[in-house]
Amino acid sequence: MNLAARLKPIQLNLLLQIAHTGKLQSAANAVGMSQPAASRILSDLEAHVGAALFERHPKGMSPTPVGEAFVRHAQVILGELKNLQAEVDGLNLGSAGEVRVGSVTGPAVGCLVPAIQAVKASAPGLKVRIEIGPSAQLVQGLEAERLDFVISRLPANHDSRDFQLTPARNEVVSLVVRQEHPMAGRAKVRLSELTGYEWVIQERGNPIRQAVETAFHAAGVAAPANITDSSSLLVVLAMLARSDVIAPQSEELANLLIGPGIRAELATLALDQQVTVFPYYIIQHRSRELQPAAARVLNEVLSRL
Image (cartoon, rainbow, N blue to C red; front, side):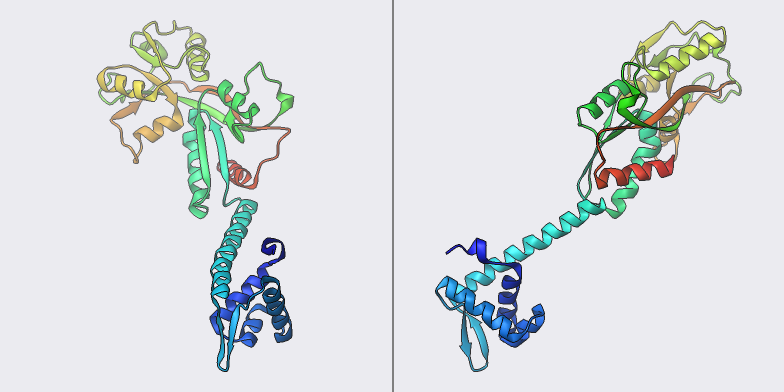
């Protein structure tokens, strides 16, 4: 007796309806078939099992012990099929599944996190993993299929023909200090006035550090000599809390720290010139198509750019 090969959802649903209504005609109507067809299905099942599934009474039908077993398992099987359908629909619509995104700090704060929160508001079952890091690390993750898409710059040692690049925007650098810093609140601060202070800044090769050093060179001013190298926001905040250190950060991150959500006791210096980093991109691997969930998050990111 191979029930797995024989049973179909319509048969299981019919059994459930017979058990629920106690009448073959009502059960047949509920599943959308004629009473003769329902009677034939029930008879075929009972013949295949070798036992009656329902007892016939003048006032209706009730499950036998074998019938009760069928009804109990039919509820589980149909419930799982319903869950399967819901999951498949969710995956196809992008409201379920997993999205793996990488980003450099600025756009992660400015557009990626708000985009993901907007998508998850209507798709709470969506699983999202965000990786924050330097561009080289993120693009390596994209190549290794660890990430669906990234928001970063394309390192020079990668062939742009392997990727689909969507221009995003320039990144503005803010110089973050504690509120009591001597230069806080001043207008049109010149870089030449800042060389004597201690700085905490990302390691050499980082785009923000390159942008700051380029700005000093363009102004004809020697770059600061007293520098602590660190990309750790925790280290940066600890130093800002205890000294007059200057910490270059993306404008988005600076606004997050100082804005109404966190209200850190920090300030940004009002420079007499804007310091910008060369643009970042939304980068996808050209040979891979995004799944619906990842495509939905990407579209939300694009709408915010």
